[in-house]
Length: 224
Image (cartoon, rainbow, N blue to C red):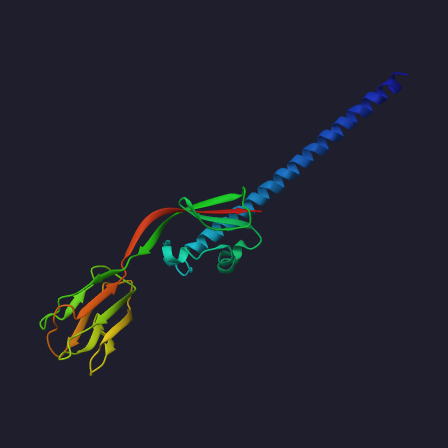
């Protein structure tokens, strides 16, 4: 009789143990899946942030230096095209307090932050005073390109233009008009003008594009 009376209590105890076990396993499984998802999001966020600041990235001028003009074109379709690692995820890329691109709806997820430099180039024009004894001008700051407006008087000709002793323009009959010349952004440039006589002031106008850099925080958020 006593054994029969204990059977319901035993059944209840087994039910409680089974329920607790199932709930515990479910919680452990959810915790494992959540940890695995967070690790995957972080992996993608780190990979995307590394690709964004790589020296050969479409938005950098060199490693860890972002080009401000290129960032203006970084919308969601371009982000996914340039960086396939973000495919299948909701992604947001921010620089400081502005959003550069947002693909999908990243409401949570994992965020990776990097300290970067942002390079912005401004147009600067100078009119060098060239003389027969010193027909050269050194750009005060480095520039990836230069535009030359050559307007010598009719009795004078600019025959050759050199950048650091390299001939980039040549015309024995005379160079006149506007010319674009690519420069090395890694060295200071000296422009030398070979003429058939001294040039009056204003015969040469040089436009170049020096860079200014500022620090900023790049934040990459990846969500599923």
